[in-house]
Image (tube, rainbow, N blue to C red; front, side, top):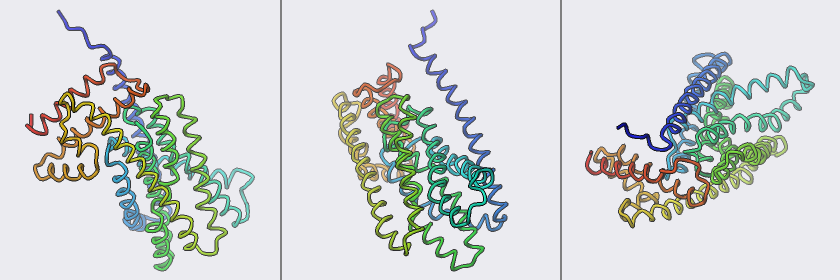
Length: 373
Protein backbone atom coordinates (compact mmCIF):
# COMPACT_ATOMS: atom_id res chain seq x y z
CA UNK A 1 0.00 0.00 0.00
CA UNK A 2 1.43 3.37 -0.96
CA UNK A 3 2.30 5.64 1.93
CA UNK A 4 0.30 8.81 2.39
CA UNK A 5 2.32 12.00 1.94
CA UNK A 6 2.84 13.96 5.13
CA UNK A 7 0.45 16.82 5.69
CA UNK A 8 1.70 19.97 4.05
CA UNK A 9 4.23 18.22 1.82
CA UNK A 10 2.49 19.15 -1.44
CA UNK A 11 1.90 22.74 -0.36
CA UNK A 12 5.52 23.09 0.74
CA UNK A 13 6.74 21.69 -2.59
CA UNK A 14 4.59 24.08 -4.62
CA UNK A 15 5.69 27.00 -2.46
CA UNK A 16 9.36 26.08 -2.96
CA UNK A 17 8.90 25.78 -6.74
CA UNK A 18 7.14 29.15 -6.89
CA UNK A 19 9.84 30.84 -4.83
CA UNK A 20 12.56 29.26 -6.98
CA UNK A 21 10.95 30.61 -10.15
CA UNK A 22 10.55 34.06 -8.59
CA UNK A 23 14.19 33.97 -7.45
CA UNK A 24 15.37 33.18 -10.98
CA UNK A 25 13.27 36.00 -12.42
CA UNK A 26 14.54 38.34 -9.71
CA UNK A 27 18.18 37.60 -10.43
CA UNK A 28 17.60 38.07 -14.16
CA UNK A 29 16.11 41.50 -13.48
CA UNK A 30 18.89 42.64 -11.13
CA UNK A 31 21.49 41.20 -13.50
CA UNK A 32 20.14 43.16 -16.46
CA UNK A 33 19.91 46.31 -14.36
CA UNK A 34 23.52 45.85 -13.21
CA UNK A 35 24.68 45.49 -16.81
CA UNK A 36 22.80 48.68 -17.65
CA UNK A 37 24.62 50.50 -14.86
CA UNK A 38 27.99 49.18 -16.03
CA UNK A 39 27.24 50.33 -19.57
CA UNK A 40 26.20 53.77 -18.31
CA UNK A 41 29.31 54.13 -16.17
CA UNK A 42 31.51 52.99 -19.04
CA UNK A 43 29.88 55.60 -21.28
CA UNK A 44 30.55 58.34 -18.74
CA UNK A 45 34.05 57.34 -17.66
CA UNK A 46 35.49 55.15 -20.38
CA UNK A 47 36.76 51.61 -19.92
CA UNK A 48 40.17 52.18 -18.24
CA UNK A 49 38.86 54.81 -15.83
CA UNK A 50 35.86 52.62 -15.00
CA UNK A 51 38.13 49.74 -13.99
CA UNK A 52 40.43 51.97 -11.96
CA UNK A 53 37.60 53.69 -10.08
CA UNK A 54 35.90 50.33 -9.46
CA UNK A 55 39.07 49.03 -7.83
CA UNK A 56 39.25 52.13 -5.63
CA UNK A 57 35.55 51.76 -4.74
CA UNK A 58 36.30 48.30 -3.36
CA UNK A 59 37.98 49.94 -0.35
CA UNK A 60 34.82 51.46 1.20
CA UNK A 61 32.87 48.38 0.06
CA UNK A 62 35.17 46.07 2.05
CA UNK A 63 34.84 48.37 5.09
CA UNK A 64 31.05 48.13 4.87
CA UNK A 65 31.18 44.36 4.33
CA UNK A 66 33.23 43.98 7.52
CA UNK A 67 30.57 45.94 9.38
CA UNK A 68 27.77 43.82 7.94
CA UNK A 69 29.61 40.67 8.96
CA UNK A 70 29.78 41.96 12.53
CA UNK A 71 26.06 42.74 12.53
CA UNK A 72 25.11 39.37 11.04
CA UNK A 73 27.37 37.15 13.13
CA UNK A 74 24.69 35.25 15.05
CA UNK A 75 22.50 34.30 12.10
CA UNK A 76 24.16 34.84 8.71
CA UNK A 77 21.51 35.44 6.09
CA UNK A 78 21.32 33.18 3.00
CA UNK A 79 24.02 34.16 0.47
CA UNK A 80 21.47 34.18 -2.34
CA UNK A 81 19.31 36.73 -0.48
CA UNK A 82 22.22 39.01 0.39
CA UNK A 83 23.54 38.78 -3.17
CA UNK A 84 20.11 39.75 -4.46
CA UNK A 85 19.98 42.74 -2.11
CA UNK A 86 23.46 43.87 -3.15
CA UNK A 87 22.77 43.56 -6.88
CA UNK A 88 19.39 45.24 -6.48
CA UNK A 89 21.06 48.20 -4.81
CA UNK A 90 23.93 48.31 -7.31
CA UNK A 91 21.67 47.84 -10.32
CA UNK A 92 17.92 48.39 -9.99
CA UNK A 93 18.13 51.20 -7.40
CA UNK A 94 20.74 53.02 -9.49
CA UNK A 95 18.66 52.65 -12.67
CA UNK A 96 15.65 54.08 -10.82
CA UNK A 97 17.74 57.01 -9.54
CA UNK A 98 19.19 57.74 -12.98
CA UNK A 99 15.80 57.48 -14.67
CA UNK A 100 14.07 59.80 -12.22
CA UNK A 101 16.95 62.27 -12.39
CA UNK A 102 16.74 62.42 -16.16
CA UNK A 103 12.95 62.85 -16.06
CA UNK A 104 12.91 65.54 -13.35
CA UNK A 105 15.47 67.79 -15.02
CA UNK A 106 14.27 67.36 -18.58
CA UNK A 107 10.49 66.82 -18.56
CA UNK A 108 9.14 68.65 -15.49
CA UNK A 109 8.73 72.34 -14.61
CA UNK A 110 12.07 72.10 -12.80
CA UNK A 111 13.89 71.69 -16.10
CA UNK A 112 16.06 74.71 -16.74
CA UNK A 113 16.32 75.67 -13.05
CA UNK A 114 19.39 77.68 -11.96
CA UNK A 115 22.38 75.49 -11.24
CA UNK A 116 22.36 76.31 -7.52
CA UNK A 117 18.70 75.41 -7.09
CA UNK A 118 19.10 72.24 -9.15
CA UNK A 119 22.06 71.14 -7.04
CA UNK A 120 20.24 71.74 -3.76
CA UNK A 121 16.95 70.12 -4.78
CA UNK A 122 18.80 67.20 -6.35
CA UNK A 123 20.89 66.52 -3.26
CA UNK A 124 18.48 67.39 -0.44
CA UNK A 125 15.11 66.39 -1.92
CA UNK A 126 15.32 64.19 -5.00
CA UNK A 127 18.21 61.96 -3.93
CA UNK A 128 16.82 61.12 -0.47
CA UNK A 129 13.35 60.33 -1.81
CA UNK A 130 14.35 58.32 -4.87
CA UNK A 131 17.44 56.57 -3.52
CA UNK A 132 15.84 55.45 -0.26
CA UNK A 133 12.86 54.13 -2.18
CA UNK A 134 15.10 52.18 -4.55
CA UNK A 135 17.36 50.73 -1.85
CA UNK A 136 14.48 50.01 0.51
CA UNK A 137 12.51 48.27 -2.22
CA UNK A 138 15.05 45.43 -2.15
CA UNK A 139 14.35 44.87 1.55
CA UNK A 140 10.60 45.01 0.99
CA UNK A 141 10.82 42.35 -1.74
CA UNK A 142 12.83 40.04 0.51
CA UNK A 143 10.38 40.69 3.36
CA UNK A 144 7.48 39.71 1.14
CA UNK A 145 8.94 36.65 -0.59
CA UNK A 146 11.57 35.45 1.90
CA UNK A 147 9.69 35.62 5.17
CA UNK A 148 10.97 32.23 6.35
CA UNK A 149 14.44 33.78 6.71
CA UNK A 150 13.35 37.27 7.75
CA UNK A 151 12.87 37.04 11.49
CA UNK A 152 13.40 40.49 12.96
CA UNK A 153 15.16 43.87 12.96
CA UNK A 154 18.69 42.48 12.63
CA UNK A 155 17.73 40.66 9.44
CA UNK A 156 16.10 43.80 8.06
CA UNK A 157 19.16 45.90 8.87
CA UNK A 158 21.45 43.34 7.21
CA UNK A 159 19.42 43.22 3.99
CA UNK A 160 19.18 47.01 3.96
CA UNK A 161 22.93 47.26 4.50
CA UNK A 162 23.65 44.98 1.54
CA UNK A 163 21.31 46.95 -0.71
CA UNK A 164 22.85 50.24 0.42
CA UNK A 165 26.35 48.83 -0.04
CA UNK A 166 25.55 47.92 -3.62
CA UNK A 167 24.15 51.38 -4.35
CA UNK A 168 27.12 53.11 -2.73
CA UNK A 169 29.54 50.93 -4.70
CA UNK A 170 28.06 51.99 -8.04
CA UNK A 171 27.81 55.61 -6.90
CA UNK A 172 31.41 55.65 -5.67
CA UNK A 173 32.66 54.36 -9.00
CA UNK A 174 31.11 57.40 -10.67
CA UNK A 175 32.36 59.89 -8.06
CA UNK A 176 35.86 58.42 -7.87
CA UNK A 177 36.14 58.26 -11.65
CA UNK A 178 35.11 61.90 -12.02
CA UNK A 179 37.54 62.92 -9.26
CA UNK A 180 40.44 61.02 -10.80
CA UNK A 181 39.88 62.82 -14.10
CA UNK A 182 40.13 66.18 -12.26
CA UNK A 183 43.52 65.54 -10.72
CA UNK A 184 45.14 63.95 -7.68
CA UNK A 185 44.13 66.66 -5.17
CA UNK A 186 40.42 66.33 -6.00
CA UNK A 187 40.64 62.55 -5.98
CA UNK A 188 42.36 62.36 -2.59
CA UNK A 189 39.78 64.65 -0.99
CA UNK A 190 36.88 62.74 -2.57
CA UNK A 191 38.31 59.39 -1.52
CA UNK A 192 38.91 60.50 2.07
CA UNK A 193 35.44 62.04 2.45
CA UNK A 194 33.42 59.31 0.71
CA UNK A 195 35.62 56.26 1.08
CA UNK A 196 37.06 56.65 4.58
CA UNK A 197 35.01 59.19 6.52
CA UNK A 198 31.51 58.18 5.49
CA UNK A 199 31.41 54.70 3.93
CA UNK A 200 28.38 53.78 6.08
CA UNK A 201 26.25 56.79 5.15
CA UNK A 202 23.90 54.97 2.76
CA UNK A 203 23.77 51.99 5.12
CA UNK A 204 22.62 54.14 8.05
CA UNK A 205 19.78 55.69 6.05
CA UNK A 206 18.35 52.51 4.57
CA UNK A 207 18.86 50.57 7.79
CA UNK A 208 15.89 52.49 9.19
CA UNK A 209 13.67 50.89 6.54
CA UNK A 210 15.14 47.48 7.29
CA UNK A 211 14.63 47.99 11.02
CA UNK A 212 10.97 48.91 10.52
CA UNK A 213 10.29 45.94 8.23
CA UNK A 214 12.11 43.71 10.71
CA UNK A 215 9.78 44.81 13.48
CA UNK A 216 6.86 43.93 11.22
CA UNK A 217 8.44 40.52 10.56
CA UNK A 218 8.50 39.85 14.30
CA UNK A 219 4.73 40.21 14.32
CA UNK A 220 4.39 37.77 11.40
CA UNK A 221 1.88 39.82 9.43
CA UNK A 222 2.59 40.44 5.73
CA UNK A 223 -0.18 43.01 5.60
CA UNK A 224 2.08 45.33 7.58
CA UNK A 225 4.64 45.43 4.76
CA UNK A 226 3.57 48.69 3.12
CA UNK A 227 2.93 50.47 6.41
CA UNK A 228 6.25 49.30 7.85
CA UNK A 229 8.05 50.41 4.70
CA UNK A 230 6.57 53.91 4.99
CA UNK A 231 7.35 54.12 8.71
CA UNK A 232 11.02 53.39 7.98
CA UNK A 233 11.12 55.34 4.71
CA UNK A 234 10.18 58.71 6.26
CA UNK A 235 13.05 58.92 8.80
CA UNK A 236 15.46 57.42 6.25
CA UNK A 237 14.61 60.23 3.80
CA UNK A 238 14.83 62.90 6.50
CA UNK A 239 18.22 61.67 7.71
CA UNK A 240 19.48 61.45 4.13
CA UNK A 241 18.19 64.96 3.44
CA UNK A 242 19.92 66.29 6.56
CA UNK A 243 23.15 64.56 5.61
CA UNK A 244 23.15 66.02 2.09
CA UNK A 245 21.37 69.33 2.64
CA UNK A 246 23.41 70.57 5.59
CA UNK A 247 26.49 70.68 3.38
CA UNK A 248 24.96 73.67 1.57
CA UNK A 249 24.83 75.71 4.80
CA UNK A 250 27.72 74.70 7.05
CA UNK A 251 31.01 76.58 6.56
CA UNK A 252 33.23 73.54 7.19
CA UNK A 253 32.52 69.99 6.18
CA UNK A 254 34.92 68.63 8.81
CA UNK A 255 33.16 70.52 11.63
CA UNK A 256 29.84 69.19 10.39
CA UNK A 257 31.31 65.69 10.19
CA UNK A 258 32.59 65.85 13.78
CA UNK A 259 29.45 67.22 15.41
CA UNK A 260 26.72 65.66 13.26
CA UNK A 261 27.91 62.63 11.32
CA UNK A 262 30.08 61.09 14.03
CA UNK A 263 27.30 61.18 16.68
CA UNK A 264 24.85 59.68 14.15
CA UNK A 265 27.29 56.88 13.38
CA UNK A 266 27.89 56.19 17.08
CA UNK A 267 24.13 56.09 17.64
CA UNK A 268 23.75 53.60 14.79
CA UNK A 269 26.46 51.36 16.24
CA UNK A 270 24.85 51.44 19.69
CA UNK A 271 21.47 50.51 18.18
CA UNK A 272 22.93 47.58 16.26
CA UNK A 273 24.86 46.40 19.33
CA UNK A 274 21.62 46.44 21.33
CA UNK A 275 19.81 44.49 18.61
CA UNK A 276 22.59 41.87 18.55
CA UNK A 277 22.35 41.56 22.33
CA UNK A 278 18.60 41.05 22.07
CA UNK A 279 19.04 38.36 19.43
CA UNK A 280 21.64 36.56 21.53
CA UNK A 281 19.19 36.53 24.44
CA UNK A 282 16.43 35.10 22.23
CA UNK A 283 18.75 32.34 21.01
CA UNK A 284 19.84 31.45 24.55
CA UNK A 285 16.32 31.34 25.97
CA UNK A 286 14.95 29.16 23.17
CA UNK A 287 17.90 26.81 22.70
CA UNK A 288 18.14 26.17 26.44
CA UNK A 289 14.71 24.56 26.14
CA UNK A 290 16.27 21.77 24.04
CA UNK A 291 19.15 21.02 26.42
CA UNK A 292 16.79 19.14 28.75
CA UNK A 293 16.12 16.51 26.09
CA UNK A 294 19.72 16.35 24.93
CA UNK A 295 18.95 17.78 21.49
CA UNK A 296 21.49 20.51 22.29
CA UNK A 297 24.35 19.93 24.73
CA UNK A 298 25.18 22.47 27.43
CA UNK A 299 28.64 23.06 26.01
CA UNK A 300 27.14 23.85 22.61
CA UNK A 301 25.16 26.79 23.97
CA UNK A 302 28.36 28.81 24.26
CA UNK A 303 29.21 28.90 20.58
CA UNK A 304 25.57 29.10 19.53
CA UNK A 305 24.66 32.14 21.62
CA UNK A 306 27.83 34.20 22.17
CA UNK A 307 30.12 35.96 19.71
CA UNK A 308 33.25 34.88 21.60
CA UNK A 309 32.14 31.25 21.61
CA UNK A 310 31.36 31.43 17.91
CA UNK A 311 34.93 32.62 17.17
CA UNK A 312 36.46 29.74 19.16
CA UNK A 313 34.22 27.19 17.46
CA UNK A 314 35.05 28.48 13.99
CA UNK A 315 38.79 28.32 14.69
CA UNK A 316 38.37 24.74 15.90
CA UNK A 317 36.36 23.78 12.81
CA UNK A 318 38.75 25.41 10.33
CA UNK A 319 41.73 23.52 11.73
CA UNK A 320 39.89 20.23 11.17
CA UNK A 321 38.29 21.08 7.84
CA UNK A 322 34.82 21.09 9.40
CA UNK A 323 33.71 24.66 8.74
CA UNK A 324 30.84 23.69 6.43
CA UNK A 325 29.37 21.08 8.84
CA UNK A 326 29.70 23.59 11.71
CA UNK A 327 28.03 26.32 9.65
CA UNK A 328 25.12 23.99 8.93
CA UNK A 329 24.79 22.96 12.57
CA UNK A 330 24.74 26.63 13.65
CA UNK A 331 22.30 27.57 10.91
CA UNK A 332 19.80 24.83 11.84
CA UNK A 333 20.11 25.56 15.57
CA UNK A 334 19.47 29.26 15.02
CA UNK A 335 16.46 28.56 12.80
CA UNK A 336 15.11 26.19 15.47
CA UNK A 337 15.48 28.87 18.16
CA UNK A 338 13.95 31.67 16.10
CA UNK A 339 11.07 29.50 14.86
CA UNK A 340 10.26 28.48 18.42
CA UNK A 341 10.41 32.15 19.43
CA UNK A 342 7.86 33.01 16.74
CA UNK A 343 5.64 30.07 17.72
CA UNK A 344 5.71 31.08 21.38
CA UNK A 345 4.64 34.59 20.41
CA UNK A 346 1.86 33.30 18.17
CA UNK A 347 3.19 34.75 14.91
CA UNK A 348 4.40 31.60 13.14
CA UNK A 349 2.54 30.83 9.90
CA UNK A 350 4.55 27.86 8.61
CA UNK A 351 4.28 24.06 8.73
CA UNK A 352 2.72 22.41 11.78
CA UNK A 353 5.52 19.84 11.98
CA UNK A 354 8.22 22.53 12.09
CA UNK A 355 9.78 21.24 15.31
CA UNK A 356 10.06 17.65 14.11
CA UNK A 357 11.68 18.81 10.88
CA UNK A 358 14.20 21.16 12.50
CA UNK A 359 15.13 18.85 15.37
CA UNK A 360 15.72 16.07 12.84
CA UNK A 361 17.87 18.39 10.74
CA UNK A 362 19.81 19.43 13.84
CA UNK A 363 20.57 15.86 14.90
CA UNK A 364 21.70 15.09 11.34
CA UNK A 365 23.89 18.20 11.30
CA UNK A 366 25.55 17.20 14.60
CA UNK A 367 26.22 13.69 13.33
CA UNK A 368 27.90 15.09 10.23
CA UNK A 369 29.91 17.52 12.33
CA UNK A 370 31.21 14.98 14.85
CA UNK A 371 31.16 11.71 12.92
CA UNK A 372 31.19 12.74 9.25
CA UNK A 373 28.07 10.67 8.54
